[in-house]
Length: 391
Image (cartoon, rainbow, N blue to C red; front, side, top):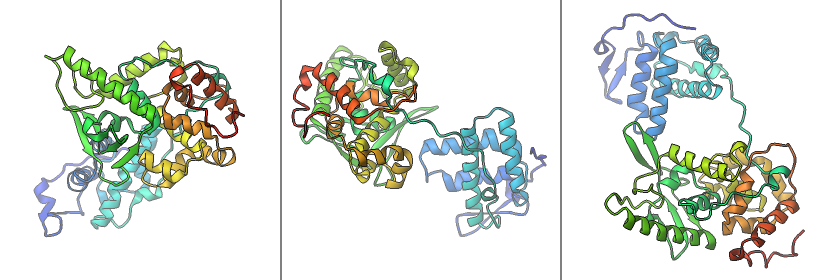
């Protein structure tokens, strides 16, 4: 429901100094566009990450203001918002973007209520179209027969191993410094994440306790990281004139932060080399792999939540609930050992997209893992201590 724009008085006619917060609004004539500008500047900036701020600003500028920016805030009704969402759908805008538009408006109007600019949050009376929940990447019967791609020798082999065994987010992995890892104790401390904006890369420090966390690493994961460090030292010598030292564990060939799109391309090439490029697997799927393996391994959901850096257990259950009851019925001890020890060539297929609709028994998955370990002499003794032997 596009709204007519009207000529706006000068901002000095709308704002006057007050003691609480610095500025007061002339709610009588304030438009949605003027309010969102002040909300972004006075309430959002500095209270969220730069990436989140930019997303709010982008949604406001591109999707909200052109349609209802000229509406006076006091006259905004649920019908305006419903018309906005309908218009966006007619334009072919994705449901996820429309949902985020609704989230942005809801947060902005919630603050408007607190500032006593409006009496109620009209977004609460509107139901935005919700996108279909994305299918979790899992392993089916067909995929279980697919040989895993070989990442051994790849420049970022340790990155893939760490992603699937530690469950870190992509930004957390790319922001890791050598100062964050204790090679003797086998622990990793998550302190920041790497993000990109138009001006280049930047880092955000974890603002909450669940973001700043320490992760214990398995022996084989540590072996991969140590081998990676040796390889990186060789790169420093080979590119001595071009290398810029940022203390990053996973930089590009010149020591600079790796761009997300470059990592995605590299990961896709790795999948293509193994004939898995059509399976829909993304780098983030490795994080899902870690979570599902831990739950299937009967690891307490509280431990899984803390390792992933989730805000609470409820979030972990919402995302991975389908795997939680199964692990209570049949806890595969050996499978958990796989996750802790970190053989990437075994764990990656767990994140392969479900294509045939089949199910995979724990016994079949363990058998599959055993065969892969048997083919790698370096891990010959990993399963010798499995209680009761193989199913």
